[in-house]
Image (cartoon, rainbow, N blue to C red; front, side, top):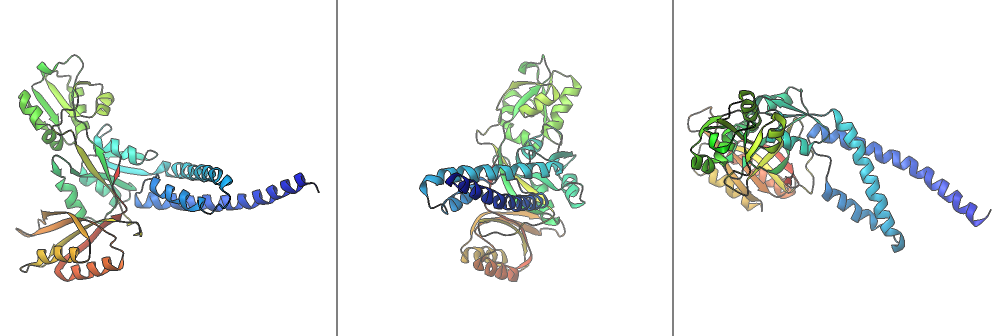
Length: 362
C-alpha cells in the first residue's frame, strides 16, 4: 500500500467516525432547540459560542492546524443553528398589539423564525402562554424614561409564568400622519400612554391634544383608517410603513437614551446555570416592624447586589404591597440557597421569577 493509499484509508476511517459523531451532535442541537422553544430562549448565544471555540481549539496541539479547526468549529456551530432555526419555525410568540407595534418588532428580533401573534392587551398575551396557545410572550416591563409597566409587573406576581430572559431595545418615537398632512395641520395625537409620556415635551410644545390607544401600532392604524390630516400617531417607522403613513418628524421622544426592557415569559423555568448572574424575585413581607429592612439586609449579607426594588399594591388588602427585586449574583450557588432560606423566614410569599446570565440588547 502506498503512502497515498494509507492516507486515504485513514481519511475514510476518520470520516466514518465523524459522520456518526456529526449525527450525535445534531441530535444534541435538536434537543437544544426543543429546550429553547419550551423555555422561550433565543437561538443565538454568542458568548457561549466564543467559550466553546476557545475551549475546543485549545485541544489542538499542532499550531498549524488550530486556525483551520476554529473555522471547522464555527461552521459546525452555524449548521447546528440552522437546524435549530428550522425546528423553531412553528414556534408561536405572543405580544401585545398589532403588526408594527414596538413589541412586535422586538419579538421578531428575538425570535426571527417564530410566528409572532398579536393580542389586544398584556393580559390576553400573557394568558395565551398560560393556556398553551403560544409558547412564550414578549412583554415590556420598564421604559428608561417613563418608568415601570405596572400591569405586566402585576401579571408577573399573580401569574404562573417565568421570565427566562430580559432584552433591551432602543425606542425611537416618530410623528406619523396620513399622506399630504403637514405638522401645522396636526391638532391631536394618538398613542400608547407610555409613548405619550416619552414625548410629553414635544406634545406640549406644539399644543397637541392627546388620546390614548392600546399601543402605538393601533394608534397608527386608527390614523390611517381615519384619513384625517389633523390627527397624527406617535409610533415606529415600521408602523408607518405597515399602515401607509408618512413620518412628519423623527425622534420626537424627549430622551435620546429612550429604551424599553422586554421580558420573555414562558410556562417552564429554565435550569439555573453557574453562569447565571442576574435574577428577579417577587415577595411580600410579614406584617411586622422592620420586615422589609430585614429582607433587604439578608440579600446584601450574602453578597448579592440589589439593582432595583419596586413596590406595587397587591389589591387584595388596602395598603398591602408586594415587592419586585432585581439582583446580581447566582442564586443557585450555596450562598444563594442560604440567602433564599433566610428570606423565606421574613417573607410571607417568595417567588423566583427568573434567573439568567445577562440582559441582552436587541
